[in-house]
Amino acid sequence: MQSSQLRRLLYYKAFGYRYVGAEILSGGARFFKALDTLKSATAECNLCELAKTRTKGSEQNFKNFKTIKNFKNSKTPANVKLMIVALAPGANEGFGGGLEAEIEAALDQICAPEEIYFSFLIRCAVPQNRRISSEIILKCAPYLTDEIKILKPKVVLCLGELCCKIVLRNGDLAGMDALHGSVFNEGGISFVPSFDPAFIAQNPSKAELFKEDLQKIKELL
Image (tube, rainbow, N blue to C red; front, side):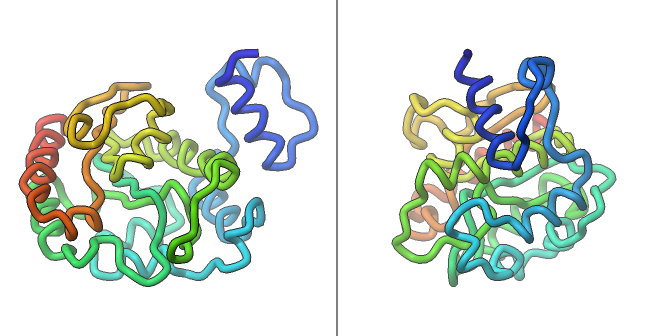
């Protein structure tokens, strides 16, 4: 069995399926058909140990962004052009790492707020210094995979090296210094890696590179 098929089989097992036909493994089938169903499942998910400490932290991480309405709204946004994906909500800090105003201003130059959708690869807030295990990634990744399929954005901006490698399903990719701003096309969607805002806050020299990546995304849109 190919590794991609095995991965899908494990996904289905994690979601409670007892029988999976070959046509499902070989096709583009997804677990969730609608965004409201996916978000309901996320809110009630108990597939890994992070569920024990789950809060509404994921929404709080976007509290300083006017685009928060697209994350909180369970209905599928009508026209998502840019989907921004970070690794996981922080237990305390916000998504922007203190750079919310700067990021908001840069995003305003790309497209309208209602055309931007924020999400996470790992749905639950991760306690400080807690390692994200491969088991957590395996059980949480299908949510994002289906979210992308449901929304059909033109571009997915992946923030942070680990997040990028998981979303792109390639652990052999170069580090972010070489990877950022690259364009990977799959299924009619462009995936663009860039630096995580929290990393930029600690490494201000990367801010201009991040802005350059956003300009590249503007050209793709």
